[in-house]
Image 1 (cartoon, rainbow, N blue to C red):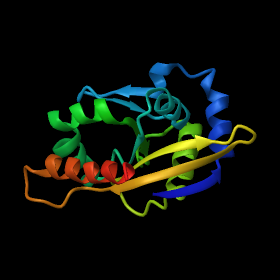
Image 2 (image 1 turned 60 degrees about the vertical axis):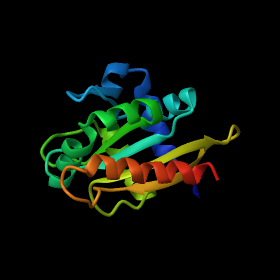
Image 3 (image 1 turned 180 degrees about the vertical axis):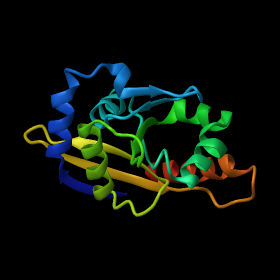
Image 4 (image 1 turned 90 degrees about the vertical axis):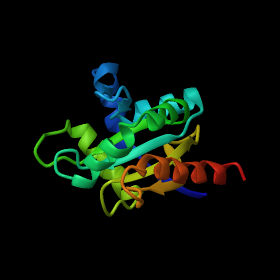
Length: 174
C-alpha cells in the first residue's frame, strides 16, 4: 500500500466554500445505470468515512474519451458491477470534459487529484481511502490500487475488472 501525505488546501478550500451553497443533489449525480456518483471529493470522502468503504475514483473524459465510454458500457452498466459497487465502494467521478464546462471548484479539484495520482491517461480508476490529521489540514491518501480498461475477450470485461478489483481488496487485508 502506497501512502501519499499531501496538503490538499485547494480541495479543502473549494470544497468547504461550496459545501454550504451546493445541494447534495448537485454533488451526487444519478445516471441511467442506477449508480450514484459523487463529483465532490469532500462529500465522497465524508461518505467513505461514514460507511467505511474506500473511494473509487474514476478519472474520465466523459465527452471525448472512447475507452471511458466503453468502460461505462462494458463494465459499469453491468449488473455484477452495480451490485459490487453499491456494496463495496463510494463512487467518485473526476471528469475532464472538453465540450462541457464544469464548475470552477470541481475542475480545480479534479486537476489537483489527477496530479496527486499522476494520471497519465483515461480511463484511470484509483481505489483509495484517506486519513486526516486532526491538528492540520493534511490529508494522507492511502492508494490501494489502480485499474483501467480490462484487457480481455469481448463480453468478459466486467468479470475481469471485478477480478482485478478483488485482488486490490485482498492486498489490503494482508
